[in-house]
Every structure is written in C-alpha cells, then in structure tokens.
Length: 315
Image (cartoon, rainbow, N blue to C red):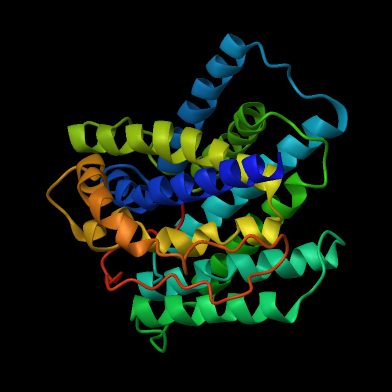
C-alpha cells in the first residue's frame, strides 16, 4: 500500500510540475490584454465555477467546521494573497530574481513546518534546499545585483511565504477532497483578487483576442483545476517541505524555459511543443527522494535554458 501511495504521489508531483510550467507563458499572454489582478481574479473565478460543477457531479459534500475554515484560509493564502503579491512584484521584478525568490518556497516551507511542529529540522534538508536555490540562481542568469524596488522585492518574498504557509496549513486541518478544497479556496482567492482589482481601479474587460482566450483557458482548466488538484494529492501523501520542491522542478518544464520566449504563438501551442524535451530535464536528480522529510542528495533543477524572457514565475 505504501508503495502504491508513493507511486501515486510521484506521478502527481511530476505531472503537476510539467503542467504548471505552462502557467508562466499563459500569464504573459493574459497580461497583454487583461490587467494583472483582474486577469488572476477572472482565472480563479472560472476555475472555481468549474470545480463546483465537478463537486455537484461527484456529489462531494461541502466542508463544515474546521474543514471549511482550513479551505478558506488555504484559498486566502495560496490564491488570494500569494497571487496578488506576485503580480504586483512582477511589474518591476526581473525574471531572474523572481525565479530565485520562487526557489525559496521549499526552504520557507521547511522552516514553517518545523516552527509549527509538523517536521524536524534536518541538516540535509537545509543543505539540499540551499543547493537548489543556488542552482536556480545560476541558471536564471538574471541581474541579481540590479536595482530592484524594495516594495517589489518584499512582495515577492511575501508571496513565497504565503505559498509555503498554505502548504503547511493544509496538513493542520481535517482532510478535504482536493476538488472541494480547491473549489472553496479558489472562490475565496478570486473574491480577494477581484476586490483588489476594484481598489486598484483596474478596467474589468473580457478578452477580445483568440490567443488571450486560449491562454485563459489553459490557466483555468490545466493551470488551476488540474495542477492544484494534483498538488493537493501530493500534499496528502508527502510532507509539505518535500512537496514544495515542485516549485524548483517547474523550472525544468519546457513550457517555462526556452518556450516561454515565444511571442507569436499561443501559449498552449508553446507548451505542447515543449513537452517532448521535458523528460531530458527531469532526470533522477530533479525528482525529490523517497525520504519523508528531507532530501538526501542534491535536488538539481538545472537546465540549459535561459529564463530572462518570462516575467511570470508563479503558477
């Protein structure tokens, strides 16, 4: 039974990282026509509606009590706060620095999990996470020493912390079906993002271009519904700090590397074209080990691709 759970978790982990790599490309297309907060709010509103339909078809119960509280907090952190901060940061933040800050998620998750009594602090886990961070910084090749607004830097760091805390929080509350958890969570996050969009006085328009609709469609169906359902399945079987390595492995996805530089083709096309090259990136070094709490080797997200072109580094 343990072996079956490990295979399920590993399959969900790799698949979600592969598919999440396309989110950055799709967000680039979405941001060409839609304001960032409104685009994110529209994305998660549609995704929440789709998940609510799935809930009705599967006859999944709506959470109550502490389970509902956990789903609301998960949505507020993982979708509302994290994406609002990330979109704000990426207005001025270079992709190289942004990718490096995203790689802080595993370390932040480990420290938060230890502080909240979920995991033990292991030297191997800290060293492995720092090596992953250094590796991402090297391959990003961004001007890390360039002048960056303090507000953007702090927003990016806060976004990474929100993502990390959301992963830890999920394991503190009663288990909820991944579809239900994401339906409630995305609805909560979408409400917060739309409120933020209104406060920022963004125009609330629907896409007019076919490429924008294709990008939004990918973000809704694949980048939100499928990716986050798989992510919660991973969290069901793995420790939060281990599951967080998905944010390092995403860098190896073909959709987030050289294919993210494509400007004249739709985002789904870029992602589909890149899938054939991804197995070469996901070597054994990139997949987290089977230990429950800490990596024993060096979790390397190395890839030969350059990431300067894409300003979108979150899922």
